[in-house]
Image (cartoon, rainbow over all chains, first blue to last red; front, side, top):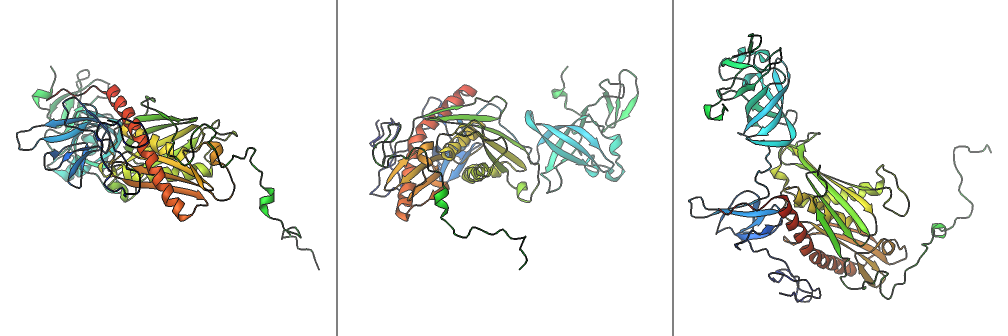
Length: 229
Length: 270
């Protein structure tokens, strides 16, 4: 329908501005109706629905009892068995994630120190990060037992790929704090001095297939379903 | 009396500095239609061409053309912060930077940032910050870089629009789009979306105003004014600029929809 303003722009829905004064020209706003069957493209700030009809998911925010979109993308309504559907706005299939507390991250060791190991966080869960974030694994967070007898040189080496969990975002001075103090966390891929990829023997040793020398690492016990044949 | 070598004595008779101002080459008439055919005293913004996603290396990018004004914006992030403050732990940081290409103005500029660019960058930052959901990006920084390719008037307004489009294209969560509109008061009449010649008049009772507006939330995030303006003209001017922003809104939404469609196909219906 045509807007009744001087401009001849066509709008889908016409709405009178709630705050416009009687003397001024009415402001016409475009409302994107997200309950249409066809996929509707949303812009940040589009009103989706009332907060009573749905639960807000990702990519949306609540304001004055209504759910608004905060991303430019498609609206996704999921009925997860609860009474209200979960509404979220997605842009691509993979969401841009930041390392959050409790997330399992894949990182690469860059340097080691008797007190901690510095790592670069590469993946959060299974989504790769576009930019590398830095993290720290302290000596007391390497394993759960005998924390004071840990030697970082015998747990990690620079270049190892490690599965770790984020315990905190860290304070002003430090980076993300990570821990490998679980059976499933620790070194996944490591290269020996000879350059070959090592095979894990037990939870604290890995063996090089070429030279048959054993090296100490804090090895992760990867679940069998994640191992490829 | 010994001569005072440390002081520089001014001239004996002083003169007004306005004598030494160079007059503009063309003095625009303050009546009648504007140079490019648009009307005075009406919200007549230049038609706008917008495109998202032109820079492949950046996370998000946008390009805007309004008349002869051409601007592009690139967004990078969220990246890890370089400098660490107390405030960075809870929410992210937005870094806005606006530069002029040396070939953008009438006179050739330099690649080093001048004071005008620093001012504009600060105003751009102030206009964009309320709109971005920074609390969702702790310990990160989002960089917004605007490059002016041709300066033909009202660049701050178009820079704000371009930057918010690029942020939306990058998938950064925002509360709302930020649209910018500017106007110029010339005596008793006003002109919306002035061109470079209209902006640089230096007669009395002239003032300019730029407004950054969030249309869905109906809030103003940035207001910049210079020159001489009475209080009533200022408030009327703000309303005029808001109307100009509403005129831009459908074009921006359409451009975003196209960009979203181009970036990814719609998810399968569950």
